[in-house]
Structure formats: structure tokens, C-alpha cells
Image (tube, rainbow, N blue to C red; front, side, top):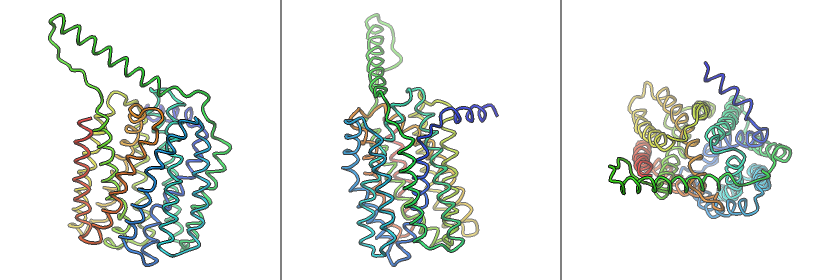
Length: 410
């Protein structure tokens, strides 16, 4: 009870108004993410079409992740890139309603991915530079938890609109209007930080601390004292590899997953949205659990455990295909836990990435996520269509295990 009261107090104190623009954006994203694969299949497209669309979109966004990250750090103006992203998405989502040609939709989706990524580096830096290092985990958790509620509401909107027979065009228009609301809210509520130095201070502190530990160990060796510990820097390559593999596995699983529930488990469109509502609800719980206390000293250990648990859950999805009587209930339970662990993972990995990624390369985090997403968003639907979902779940579990190994080495 005390932790809940402390969390409520922290939420009321730290929930800055600027988050509301992202709240509306995530509402649109939650609705659109589940709607898009169902829409593509509904107009005669295939799982491979979905995979190609996702892969091309994410691949095209990779160089722009570097570009947007470099530009926001160079100009130290973050608001303009957030506004550009939200307004562009509102326009593109409206254009989605004007065609049912799969190839035109792929072109629009690629443009959307390139412009969507414009706000991500700015958002991460805005949080890192507006709060001290001690508050990063809690602040990222509050941001992600608050915006995940937006995703949850977006999914509930999809559920209600499907139940009352609203067409896809109406849903896409709602996505467009929500991004327009995000643009309007961000104009009024977002302010660029006056000073940008917190990440520099953190890197300087880490360098001084590393040098200090080196001097202490050298002094002990000189004095003939037995040394129990060892001097070790973070393995950036292993950390980046773990992040890419985690994104790869997540994308392999979640890109074709709405079709799994729609076709293999024979759920209606409304029930598919309901399943992802539960997944998003698990994410909300995970974000707020991550923000209930600082994990500065145990972040990497937490990340490794979470990735291992996600691997186990992916393997458990195979049982969904083997137990027809309870397959929907089991799948829902697994997705709730998937969402919870993802919330814990993202908060910790975002905080650590702000330490490790140097200034001027703020887009690197999104580049790594996109690289994994490119591979997974094509391979997942391809495996689902050619050999079945059992191989999707098996592949996902194996890749999560490889990610676990990489994070342990970091």
C-alpha cells in the first residue's frame, strides 16, 4: 500500500503536461498497429505483403534514425522534430483512407515510418536532459506507462468500433485525428530544455569512476593485497547486439500475431483487439513496476532475466497450438506477461542506452531497434505463411535466448 501511495505521489509530481501530445499519438498507434495487418489481409493482401511492407518501412527508417538523432542534438531543438512527426503522420494516415491498392499503401507506410521516427530521438533526449540520472528510470517508466495507457485506449477504441461495425476508413480517420490532436497539444505544451548537459555529466562521472577504480586496484596490487574484483568497462557491442536480437525476436512474433488470433484461433476482429488490450494492460503494469524504485545498480541484471523470461513465454506459445480446449485463455495469459516484461525491459534499456550512447548519436537506439525490426517483420510473416506459426514461436524463443546471452556478456 505504501508503494502505491508513493507511486501516486510521484506520478502527480512528475507527470509533466508535455506528455499529453505523445498520449494522443500512442492512442493512434495502438489502434493502427492491430488494424493494419487485418486491413491488408481484408483487401486481398497476404502475410508476405505485410512482412514486405513492415521490412521496407523499417529499413528505410534506419538512415533517418541517425539523421533525426544527429539533427536534434546538433540544433538542440527537439520540439520541431516532434511536431514534424505528428503532423506528417496525421496527413499520411488520412491518405491511407483514399486507396485500397496494396502497393500504394506500402509507399505510404514507408513514408510514415521515416517521419514517425523523427520524434523518437528527440523524446528520449528530452527526458534525459530534463531530469537527473537518478530520476531516469522513474521518468522513463512514467512516460512509457502513461503513453501505454494511450495505446490501451486506442485498442479499446478499435474493439468498440469493431463491435459497432465501424469501417476501416473510420478507424483510419480516427488515427489521423488523434495525431492531429498530438500535434496541437505538443505546440502548446512542449518546451525545449534551456540547458543540455546531463548526459555529458553522466559520461564524465562514469569515466572518473572507472579511473578511480583502476587506481584503487593498482594501489592494492602494488601493496601486495589480494584483489577479489576486476576492472571492467561496459561492452557496448554486446549491449547493442542484445538490443538488436531482442527487437528481432519481438518483431518476428508480433508482426503476424494479429493474423494468428484471427485465422488460427478464429477470433473476430473485435476479440483480436481485446487480446491486444490485455497485452497493453500488462505493459502498463510493467512500466509502473519499473518506476516504483530506481534500478540504477541492477539494470543489466534485470534486463537479462526479462529477456530469458520472454524466451520461455515464446516457447510456451507452442503449447497454445497443442491444447485446443484452452488455447485462447493460455494465449491471453502469455500476452499479458509478454507486455509486463516488455515494460520492465524498455525502461531499463532506455536508461542504460542514454548512458552508453554518446551525444550526437541519439538516434542509435532507434537504429538498433529498426535493424532487428527489419529482419523480424519479414521473417515472421514469411514463416507463418510458409511453414506455420509453430515455427514462428520456436524461432522467436531461440532469438530471445541469443539476446539473453548478449546482454549477459555486456
